[in-house]
Amino acid sequence: MAAKGVKLFGMWASPFALRVEWALKLKGVEYEYVNEDLSNKSEELLRYNPVTKKVPVLVHDGKELAESLVIVEYVDETWKDGYPIMPKDPYERAQARFWAKYAEDKCLPAFFAVYFTTGEAQMKALQETKESLKSLEKALEGKKFFGGETIGYLDVVVGWFPFWVRIVEEIAGIDIVNGEDLPLMNAWFQRFLDVEMVKKSLPPKDKVYELNRARREKLFSGQP
Image (tube, rainbow, N blue to C red; front, top):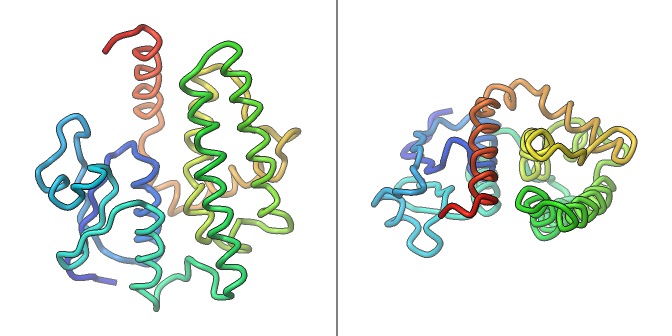
């Protein structure tokens, strides 16, 4: 499905830009991807998003949108005839938004704390991450995906977890998600990563691993 003037400003290793890519791909929307150097942001990006100056930014026919969750909903509503991302039922739609906000407010900060800490602080963050993911598992009960039999809005929102969590586990030498503590989440991790569209759009694992390993080492070395 061709779409006039669709441009996505992202960064190759950004899980948040990847959310928007997944939404566009599910809808079959053709788009131009602009890979930003976040240490030297383009004038275009700063012009389109002067408020937060972050990626992703979607530009559609000259109109810009920032924040990945906002953009994903916009994509779903704009290309209505494509793949349905948000549930049609109002209650289910509200539930998907609730869990998406929960994931952003609880799961994401706890997970980042695991990556950015060591020792006792990391163990505390690890416990908080597992507890938040255990709560999120409730939205998976009786389902193949968060969206049911197929990928939906919440899958798109938290779909970066299966890829990045495993990388952080390797880097930090810890176990976050396993079949014993989080059986539903663990099974969903593999199912989501097995989806062809997901596999084809993920960045190279070795490059993401090295980027995040180096970033973590730099953080703990005290380098600016």
